[in-house]
Image (cartoon, rainbow, N blue to C red):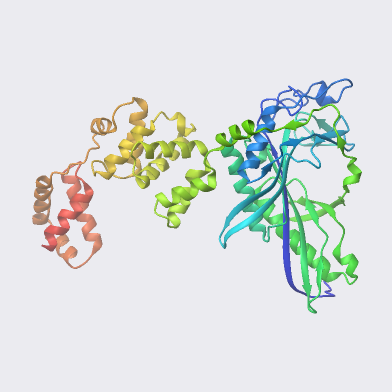
Length: 498
């Protein structure tokens, strides 16, 4: 390809628009059922269909969910806001307008601290406003057969939709994907959305442009392009990276400075081609003909309502992750374990209950791994395994005291026993024969007998061969089933080095 100009340096600016479907039982402005799936066009009513004479009624729970997200993102909450009509004509919106919020968003001026590898990175939240989702157009018949027309499914129409808009504070595709992942954990933690991308609960739209410095020091700004409806973290990162490269390449290959900037446009993502593609030039706000919805009253937020919602938020995932990492030692392994524990609110609550019952943090975290593995093996949620946090804390205490081995299989056997019939962990361990023998007299006698029978292993051990030590410990453990392996190692070392 011919290059007419050279990009000396490029500053990437990405802002995000994220649409989050809220997990209310009914839709945003009507009592029709809200949920993924179902036979096409069964979760609709007269209001969703836009029939004459039907009036909307605001879903209070959706407003509360939106406010919780806003508070968690450090936003200010509008004490007075209203609803607006956003007009556009499309088959998936029977009313020919969408009820949204224009100049008075429910949440605004937030700040979120993204923890990157380079350190904290501040992301400003411009606004988070409520609206109703549109339906879906399907361009294939059920079963994947191509058709020459489109099928309209209005089950999604009217779903409460929270649109979160950031300032262009992201500078790398990796930051964009990381923020999307953390936002998913946040809405799941708050219980306001299931956050499942494959079900359309979250859709990401990066707005990308590049400030390019040429070889003469002149700076050109490319036009903003918006990539629509991305629904996976991996695709979000790849699409953003590709679009940055495309804009720089277009600038380099276009000699006319004005044409090189491009137009403000909407793009899609072609996964097969691994490339973005032009869809249309962007509309301007006047095209939507916003005006206040005459059928809905404004929303007034008083101190009592706001205080109540703040009290329901609790500790957020980032704060919880930091606390867990400190408890578990603060190293890289602790950070990883803390991230897993903080990712699911119910699991984190269970872990906290184990700690409250006296479980040592690192032992408790190890037992959480065993619980998680059992949950996956049985395809049962962890909380439904039947093990009480207080009993799990007792297991941690038994391991710390050296009364049972620290292995995962031992932990799983004991967890299964206390889940089947609630009883003290030590009693369950005794019934399963898991209590370790810590009688030094019996251990010393076994060591003496083994040394007398295995002079070759003794010579190897004294020659510094670690494998010989392991063989000796294994043989001693076989002689006295239930011996405390740690104590056996300590007594063997003392005897042979003494």
